[in-house]
Image (cartoon, rainbow, N blue to C red; front, side):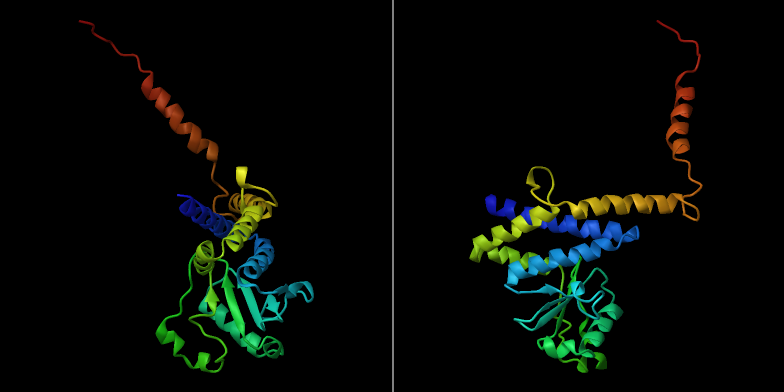
Length: 236
């Protein structure tokens, strides 16, 4: 069915995005997070009619937040790190800065992850959250599954918006016959993987003493020695 195909395609693109971020970060290639900020900005604007701006363009490493919409008075922190301590630091930094007045509806945390981050009810009762009533730890943290839910809703209620969002993801993350734009994230995935391999094989790396050729060739040679053995054969 076309509806299933369309939704599965969007789901696959999100999966590619999440995989690229995980693998690149594991190799120490964190620039992909900065590139993802811009894609997140365009995606959130297209999905929710925000007018978000990338605040890091006006001030490098903007404290506490990355994106801001003066129309809706909402700010976003875009991150691939979902530690509870990281979330608390973001909330504390935001509400302790003058930006909390400019973006009076508070900060939202957009996790670059295919896994939704939930904070247990017991943790939500901590005194920390009572200091910052403008942040709801249950509803103000979003990840790819949350966006996917909204995009699926668009398919039924606003087909042109769905098509626009799907094309946006295709342009940035698509490949093969679907590709029609930049391939920055996939290129960075490749470069990050190469760097990770070099780190593992380089001086001080875990696999610096590993000889791949021995692993590949030796069993073959041993197999040959077992296969070619002179032995008498009786033919009846």
